[in-house]
Amino acid sequence: MSSANPVALIIGMGPGLSAALAQRFAAGGYVIAGFARSPEKSAALAAELAEQGHKLDLRAVDAGDFAALASAVRAVEDQLGPVEVLVYNAYSATPAVPSQIPLDALVADFRVNVGGALAAAQAVLPAMQAREKGSILLTGGGLALDPTGWLPAASLAVGKAGIRNLAQSLHKEMEGSPIRIGTVTVTGQILPGTPLAPETIAQRFWELHSKPAPAPVEVIL
Image 1 (tube, rainbow, N blue to C red):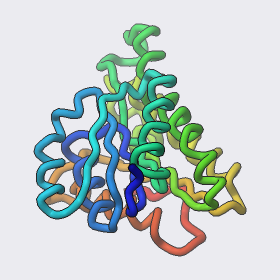
Image 2: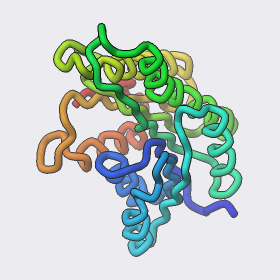
Image 3: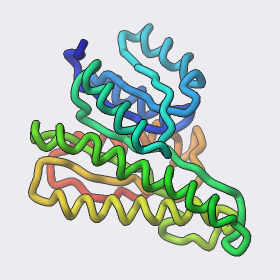
Image 4: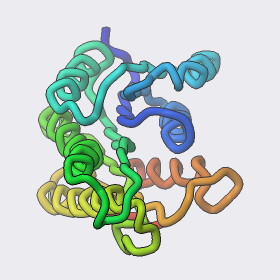
């Protein structure tokens, strides 16, 4: 049964930033759907939000399985209502410098880091365009701006560069439409009590979605 509240879908649900995103969008009146390989890790958060009168619907979904991802999006829209906000926060990383990373691992990581974002965007866009309303927000990283500071994160750097490219190209494609595309590029380690605290970053996602147009395609923190 569809909810009376709008739906925000967070892909890559878990502790840290995803939890802060769920709390921020729930506080803004959204039902939260959370996809993760291990959704049980967010069970305590779901219970906490339920006590506050909010809903976090957790589902086991592998962001690297595009068919399963699209099917899960359809199920959310059938059961909870149309997705008004998509936040893609999933990632995969194989620790290795560029010359040593196995090619198959790089491709598998890219499948999650970028392919899943595009698959999810393609899954939610038709309904967003039909309703003339929606936001697609991607979590970027400073490695997209400079991949040389952390060479063992080579596969993640390639993924974040791809996310930045995808956000910019989707933003251009949707130019003039009511669909909002954006990325929050996080240039350091996410830590509580710092300028890159999860709650601070989640607020910037909220602002990208909720502030009047025109909105920037990228916010760099």
